[in-house]
Length: 110
Length: 419
Image (tube, rainbow over all chains, first blue to last red; front, side, top):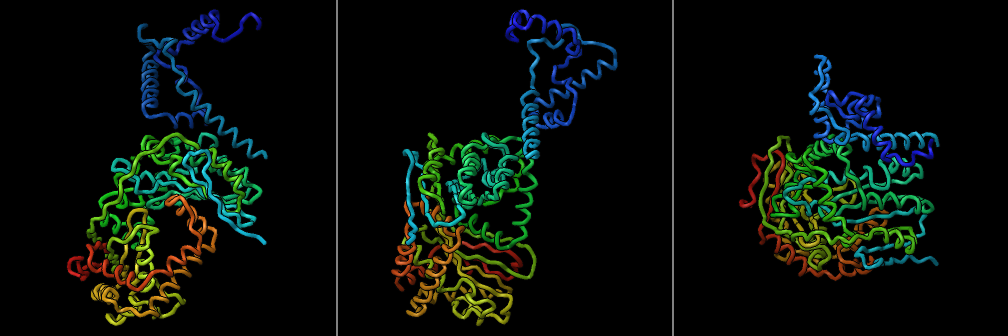
């Protein structure tokens, strides 16, 4: 099976990933993937490091989603977040936070 | 026999100057001197050098802040940064054997800082502490105000971040200032207790193709700034435009400074060799609250010379001026001159005894003039100052447009045009 699915961006897998993204459902209330990430201490630090504009956009999307969830509604279909538009904005900051933490742990072991 | 020799080199024509002095010490001291002092700040980025100095231990492209700190601590090395009006100096002390391991940190800090916004915003409390400490000290206040009053640009910039820029220095300001000033043509790499070949190899990593921005010359204007701050004492600094560093006139001013007196040479002594002290003890009956020393500062294209007086009585400033006028009229003996020259030479040679003093002297000379003059050369040029040179320097002080800055209880302090 592994030999039949070479690179992660093969045409078969992209179709699957799109289907899965839509099945998750958070795009129906206007969220992006990184808005839904579980906030442990690393993620909290990464969010603290976001530039102001990105942070404000995130807060807006979360507030809108909470409001919709309370009213038991979803956005109209043309406002759902599209798979292509979903930007993994938190990923670089999170990677850096984890790298720094690992560096500290490595050092403490010595 | 062991001989110490200063060697100069320039790797690959990058413009970086490398100087080393092998003193066979078990401790190596490496300094990177950059022409990035507060004089190179512009109106848009006042205070950027203050932030840069505090930001020197932050994450770089090659090493995180954590790694720099712990890496240096692990080998007992230390990295410190000093900034002046003309230079930013990064100096690294380590054991000779650890030299190869620690130079990467120095290179990273001086050529590849990352300027991460969240690390920079954490610096804000440190800026405020620096400013609060400076505000408490009248000596710092009077010196900063003197420069602000004396020059129109460049040297008038304060060493500290001005109030309106605290919290407003952005990553863009820092990156632009860095790109304009931290080019290898504006840097000197100096080492004490290192082999010249090893230092040249380190110097190769400083290669940069930028030429940097041109800097304006300092223009003297002569002004006056007074700060009422209560308290019982008045700190007054009265100066004229002196001479640029390294010139023969600068030596004359330095000898004049020693002639007038720079503070007691004997602890708890009565400072009888200082002409200023002699003059003002006659003028006032409050000897314990009074101190007058001659002040001299030299920069690459200008200088300041004058008197710094701390007193309670208002007649003291005029008495100090009278002493300088006396010298300008030629009233100085050959003994006074010899004594002043000997004191100056002794002070200079003693400053070279410590590794900090030697590194600073080596670095500033190499960066300003591209060569190093041995202590013998410097003491000879001091010795060649004649009494007519000193009289000419004193006349320049008496006749030229003066600058004054005062701090304290100023009710009775004369203005500069009343002196």
